[in-house]
Structure formats: structure tokens, C-alpha cells
Image (tube, rainbow, N blue to C red; front, side):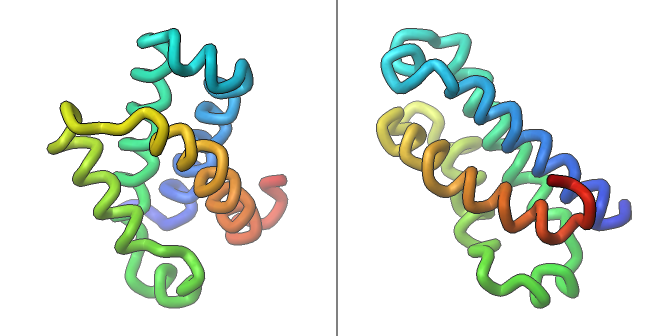
Length: 111
């Protein structure tokens, strides 16, 4: 089992990539399958990394909806034909920045 900090840094990197990939706005996101694929992949990896965090760490950060992130990962992986791009966009604009801020506070000096 890897140290929690490895997974936290990985989550943070995925958040940064998602921000970068969505910086062009919703119209660019809607019109580019390449960007959509990159965002979906980083959301999936982010969620997978969150599942590998220790129970101890998760219990110290109860404000993060760890179970919701895990459930979202299952949707991304198993219900990929039913994904709603508008909902994915909402996640990238609301949930991802919030998670990024929280993870940054978990890792001293990561701002």
C-alpha cells in the first residue's frame, strides 16, 4: 500500500489537468471529444486514487464525500454510454475545484 500523500498528489494533479482541459469553456468542451475523453479519464483516475486512500485519512476529512466520489467512479467506468456531458461539466466547475482546495489543505505546501 502506498502512502496517502502519493494518492493525494495524484488527485491534485488530476484536478489541475481537468482545470487545464476545461479552461476553454463549455463550448470547447462540448465540441471536442478529445477534451471530453481527457476530462473523463482524469475524473476516473482521480476517483480511483481517492478509493486507495486510507480509512484513517478519510475519517479525518469527513467533509469530503468519499463515498459519492467512489460512486461517481463506478458510473464513469461502468455506465459510460449513459454519461451526461452537462453533468460532467458541472462536476468539473463545482466539485473538482472544491476537492482541489481541500486536497491542497491536506498536503502542506501544495498550493
